[in-house]
Image: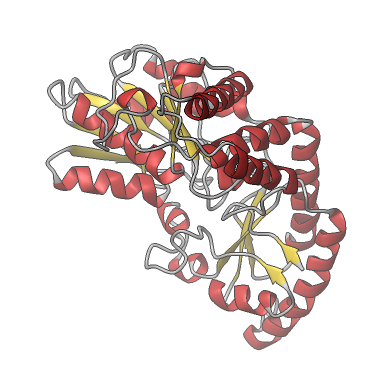
Length: 386
């Protein structure tokens, strides 16, 4: 079995699962309880927070635990919009955001907020000048993803940060769910970033747990009312086994990070070298410092993406059609559509996404299998014929 769908979710690392099991069976007290079992749980909760903060290079009180990337994104976006509504109701995002960001903006627009969606170029990247022109006195929030989840393009977060230095009252959110552990953190997380979102199941930790980084001094309106956990920002009893497991997974992820990213890039490059000269193949994730090393999106013209996904599945190779969160909906290939890729090609796109457990031998096997598939469909569609 070859699993090339790691941007959708990853397999839990065995030692991370062991940490989850140990905490779940031995430290089951509520961190808010006053007795010693509760205190033991609280101590582990805060130790996990400190570890993640140290690994991210931030302060422990800037790390908040959520249920994952979707909640972190919604809390950052809606929490900012509500908190700052008396100062302005203009909010800005890009046209290629993950559904959890795009739909949060859609909902705020329905509530009377004014939304500007910045277009992207042929690489799926926003132009900082477009953002500059969109800013006005009512702008309270800018939310631009770090790494696109469909094609892997890296947004110009450093340049956006430089621009927003002149607008200190605007809160800057970056969805970094696809960025951690890919040796590009300095491109997507800067001192000007006020809020950033992470999701643990993208790096071999359990599902249902994530992080929202909130810079010290920045204010958000909580979306959950309850017992006041997470300094009142995110009420609800903390998922301590998953939090401890996420802390361990974060540490493991960032060990030898550059070597892991190089291996992922080598797999991507090997497959691109095979694909690039084949008629009817369109590659949207080139080898470039503007693209993350672990995502490869391409299309085989004339064949719908879901057909190719299931054909590969029959050979025990698992990939996806662009984002797993939208691949079963009408939002499929939304990034490619925003890039003005023809619909007939956009709907033929598939996404391969690698992690440190994948190998060049798997790339070789993928190429061997895909070559047979390509030749079959090329003959049907007369690809390469004059």
